[in-house]
Image (cartoon, rainbow, N blue to C red; front, side, top):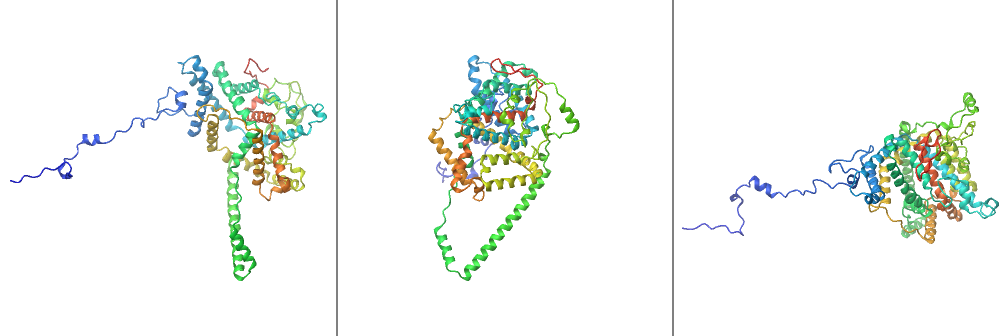
Length: 552
């Protein structure tokens, strides 16, 4: 009897001879999912700021956008870990509720500032106040350098910094360019008083810590770096990007063109006609596209709510009743805050009257209100006017006849299209510059710059004077190369003077002590835009820092 051969282990077994897999075996064959992928590790913001939240719970909403909330929470967590956690853990290691309590105060401040920022007139700040301050900075810097070695400089003994400080005296900055810590704490104290509820305002310890954290970031990290001339030049070079190499003309194409010009024929004539027709068609298509884009832009600007701006109270129209009210002396109110006192400097009052009313000022204590004079035709509702004035000051256009004529033509066009520009410029600002993606990008860049590895970065060594000179010369050459050839004679003058004009453009931003004055004035302008009551008398304000209080 023949026996059936048994299947060997090396031979394939027929699929029909195997029993169907059971449910248990099928489940055992599937690889189990890793436990780590089920729950992601909590972020730094959740561990430090909200330790009571479950790991899978989202962070509390801060503003309207989740991406912006995440960036702000990360920046806040990094700042508290760097400036508060080191010394707080030395006092007590087991108290984990202090940072969350500070987070509650800071988030309330951020929400209050964001609510005020939505109602602020940023167009007036960007297009009127900031160009006015920069224009006055250029004028005062050049005046201070022109007065060196004269009788105006105390017999030639005063330096350019001393002369500039005398023209733009500010209690928040010293002559050497260092910021006054008491002034910064007083400003922060006024901000906290305006945004904090009474129960949080009474917590003096938490309020002092918040002031110290923000004050250290401003006085030690931001101001000393951003006021350096070489830092501004490096920032400008980074924004411009790498230099565009000049493409050399192909030698073969040049020879071919020369041969075509030398041997004129009917074929060459046909080619020239076709090239002319092609160029005309391109010009026509470009004009049609520009017309459609302009029509669409005008429609969007007219329908946008950003162009509906309100007239500032300082530029009110004079009426007989108002004149009678102005003639009556008013009782002087309490002393205004330190912000309003600093805007009384002579340099600010010397801003051209056409747009000087945009800078909030307060009459000093003990003086009666003066009669409000009517503003010129180019008042502060003309948003393009201060920028044109700044353009002429920076490039010294008034010293060249062709530039002066072109500059005057720009003023005439600005006056003619003034009503449209007053709607177009705010539309561009709010939709293209202050858009939500740009704000998220700015916060992310600030976070990486201040805390590159999760902690404050050590200040890199300043470039040597030779490196700074090379950086400045490179930026001047880059400016000359980037200006179109058709506009270069008007802005920079003749070819042999263009590099010198570009270098003179960078000169007023080379002194860190003078730039510190501009930094403080811009800080004051931003704060007065967000908190107008800080520049108006009549409210008591307790100043923080080193036991100093403002008079009430």
